[in-house]
Length: 207
Length: 207
DNA sequence: TGACTTTCATACCGAATGGTATGATAATAA
DNA sequence: TTATTATCATACCATTCGGTATGAAAGTCA
Image (cartoon, rainbow over all chains, first blue to last red; front, side, top):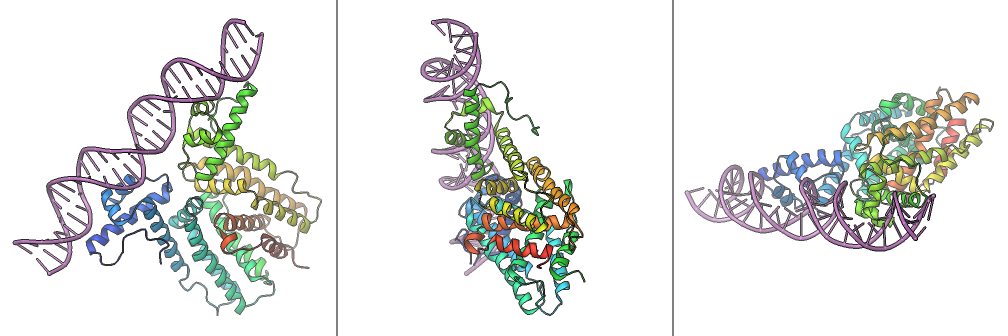
């Protein structure tokens, strides 16, 4: 399932060994998401994880393998969380979009999601495969599900559901980007709810 | 005008010296935008610029100073370009939004703009001042100008101009991000024009 | 021309990098 | 218990890092 065989097989490890492995991963997540790939040293990962450097290299091939495994795992975990039955086909459009907006609002307040987004973008040139994974595993199914909902629940203003999906999700993701990554919440604050309400009225009408 | 005094004064330099300085900047732009701050070595900058390392250090204090100067200059250059009389208050709304959408479409095809965006986001944690500069110098005036236009040219669906501005610009910036940075144009292509047309119809009505 | 400044080439510095070797200690499994 | 495996501590490796020193060559300007 992984893009590359960067880690030793996860099967057949003792609980002791598996705990160490999780320890490494937890530490590596913190450090990589904070300092980026090149800004992170393996010594620091070991220190943060409370583990000796050799232990890391007995679980992962090299720095790239560790970083890749971390970002892949965070991305795929994010996918699962994203589809916790968020979109219910039997719910009316306005309620559905409001619920979806709340999902984005929740992401905005999740520092690890924000850091993942920033990291995938920041490393997209050095690690194109991770960016492609994000697109295929997060963006593509998100847009698709949105379209499927409006295929079942049409609405007069929605003539091009995929374009609408991109407008809806794009606006809210960009809101997270400008507010949480580019310090908008400090310099130029704006409530996501206000953007979302306007957006929903545009899409469904303000009746 | 600069945030920090990272470079020696630009005044009173001979043309010979100024040419070397531009040479450094051009090389540094290429390397920093491709490899990021930590991924860039001063040796590589010198090599790419066709200059010896000492020459760099006679024009800039240190690596941070060079990087900061580069990103500041690119950001401010982008601001000037952005306001090349793009928004004309006397033009009708649909035409104005179409023109604005074309500006974003032009940015999408400008690799140095895309790289700047990616870099500012990717380094936002290490260089928060650069991210704040981008927000204050690019995002804030963009939103403001948009609002001023619709204060002069009201439209029935535009009850909250600032929210509309964020939806319009946010959608198109996110389009650039997903298509050009996250490899959407390769994996999941979608024409910006299609998004923009749908967006404009939502905002102004499709009559 | 000559006085001066800048860039050149090259070599160097201490510190940090990713990654490895060794041998002792501790956890697991028989 | 014993045999094995994994983690420990520590030291080490070659390379690269940001940054500096020196002195020769080349540009500028009077």
